[in-house]
Amino acid sequence: MIAKTSISDAAARRAVEAAREKAAELGIAVTISVLDEGGLPKAFLRMDGAPLAGIEIAPVKARTAVLFRAPTSMWRERVETNQLLPVALVGLHDRVSLLKGGVPLVVDGAVVGAVGVSGGSEDQDDLVAGAAAERALAS
Image (cartoon, rainbow, N blue to C red; front, side):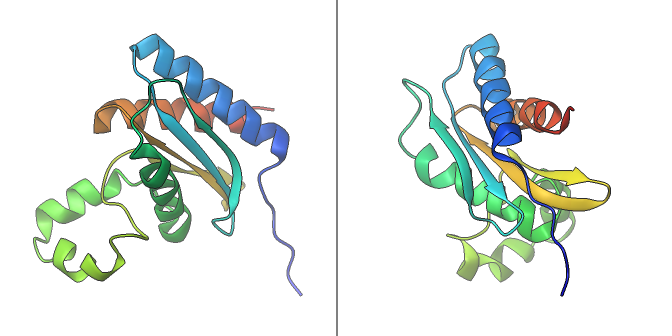
């Protein structure tokens, strides 16, 4: 048996609220998906006016951050140095995202969940997800 640590519902709610606030500050409407350490839904919000596509994209960004235990922004550098990478991942297009906006939630070296954000530019989504992760992990 092994023990796993997971994001609490209170931390997931803090993440959503922080993301909503940061998106409003940036003047954008986004969809926010918070997943637990196994990639299962913990919290979700589609802000008024957020693009419908975010309903599908935000959870995929979060799932990618959980699966690879790294921010989705890391794919940008990897794609630039390995042009075949997107081709290699094409079969996983509905399960992984090469777009910025997915951030793992890490406590004492363990991934306890992730946040995925969609609705702004990639850089805006990344800023919003980072704000969400920061507040989710604040005690």
